[in-house]
Image (cartoon, rainbow, N blue to C red; front, side):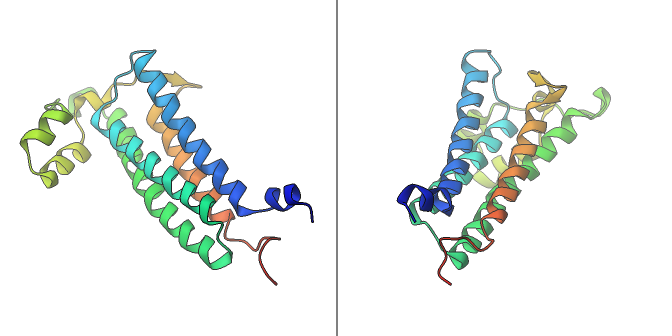
Length: 172
């Protein structure tokens, strides 16, 4: 089999596509922030971190080029990082759909909390959400950024799961 055909049927390309997708998500988030003025709330920042961690795992998997058992290990790591990101995105969506009278109060900024509070308290406060997280800015096809991010996390999990199936590059 030619080298290009072997590469196309390999998990390396699939993992590289996953890493590229994560990089594209971060690039788009930075575009929204710096070109369109959509400043991220604390939950948005945590979702970005989850995307970056998932992208790093995809990249490491692409560099490693695992066989069947290794693909299952990478899938598990991707499930954990994407699952955490999906949970944060779900919480963000829930806050965005709360009635105005039930919204949590806006809290201090993330950089202030990191400088002032212990890490466990920062995580608790951020994951609880605040009023600024309820603001819906940019939308596409009537879905907000956290809704699109949740969809992307789910797609990353499915993509990683698909790589656990036997591959032509696996030994018989």
